[in-house]
Length: 253
Image 1 (cartoon, rainbow, N blue to C red):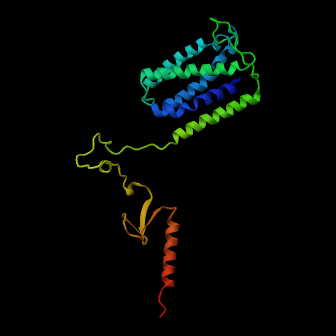
Image 2: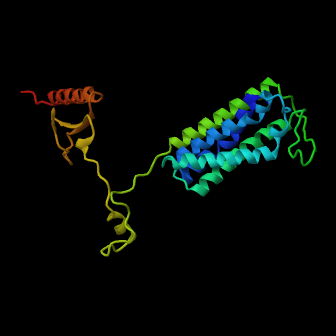
Image 3: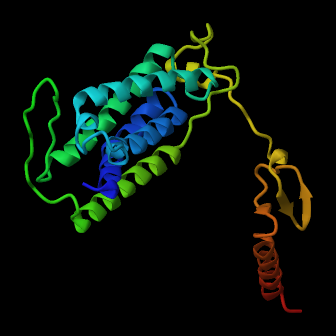
């Protein structure tokens, strides 16, 4: 594969892990993992810029994948210690970075093994050459298709993860045991303290009754909740309809 194909393939493989990593640790760590997956997608091809290293040589082996994994794991630990956004311990952070770094390189090798040139993944321990000869690396359609599918999958996974509703814990947290006066599970649930946002704290929210703003008149059917300036025309229209209806029903002298 070429660069576009490798990036798309790594993005496609990492996409399902975004919500899992976010749920287990944090969204920041999931984004860091996505960055590692994208960076490692083309890292083995650095051999093309080094004259003394053959293309698809040492950088296209499992040993290079493990080396990159160690560096990625150590880097994850350092970044995690620089702030609290990752919400992950040293051992878990190293394991996560190692897994993503190593997996990113192995995904690159998988993308190259399907081409006619193939790779020798165990060199120099073994010179066994592996190739499936499925399509050429320069196949533009396949590279663009893999990039498109991978990008859509990763972006969709990120959007769904970020867009998930976040639960708000009650004020003071949930009690570890039910109150003594609770006689049932329903009573225990209803007795939990909850965070209440006063309606006056919501900008622009007013309650109008006969054109005058005042507090919440529970049970008053003529009150209309509105958010200025969107619902002002609706309130005025209702008042006009009410006046016209009263004039129609006025007894004729």
